[in-house]
Image (cartoon, rainbow, N blue to C red; front, side, top):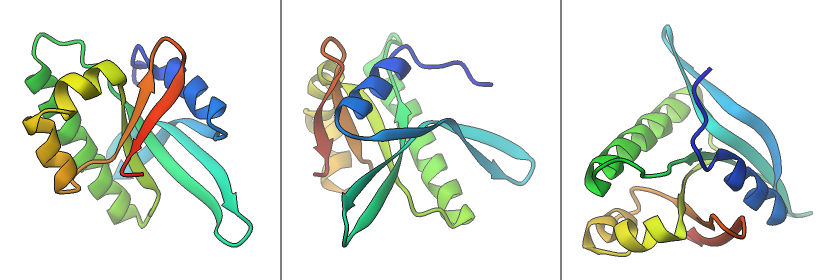
Length: 139
């Protein structure tokens, strides 16, 4: 089983505080003989008409020596997981969870903004102290 990110439990609590039910930890992906896993699966009733929304969340701490290297790794993992989900026919929305501090230092500058502007990645931004969701991108 893969090792949990240092913010795994923080994001789990933040999702629960925001009204999400965490349905899976280590959501399994399989393609060929390779097995991967996404940190969290969650769902929430949106409305009676629209039904239940299901999401998957990959948690990233960005604690390496370089924010750029951490971004490259997180982006590669995100794109790989999105493509495997497509192959599996799973249409859940995939989010990358990052702290508000990382959002401000990586995604609120030109480098990260190009990913958001071109809709390459979806983010859930959380406060690691209060264990609350700060922002969903896109909303």
